[in-house]
Image (cartoon, rainbow, N blue to C red; front, side, top):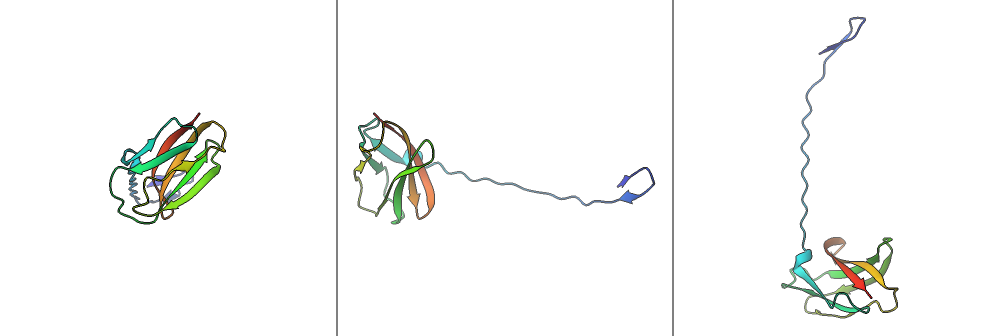
Amino acid sequence: MATDNPGATSDSSVLAVTVAMSLIDNSSNYNIYPNPNNGHFFPEPLYELAEINNGFDIANLSGEIVYQKSASEGEYPQEIDLSGSIPGTYILMIMNNKNIIATKKIIKK
């Protein structure tokens, strides 16, 4: 209970808030070879894929998507060609439907 100068009072109830966060890092479940590379490389899962709706998005460090490809189970390894992109660092996002399930840093020489 709080009281102000003129004598008015106010009650408040207790509010409990629980915040939970779940972050699963699957990045160690994928290999990129070779890395660094000349723009040609292979993403390879290190285990059998549980889902069939996988794909890849690759973004530059400005967040611009420079490459997209879908892949089904059994289509690994498949070559990704970024040879037309400028040298630099890129982020490979491995997708399951629209969810990012893993990320990998790619260095193009």
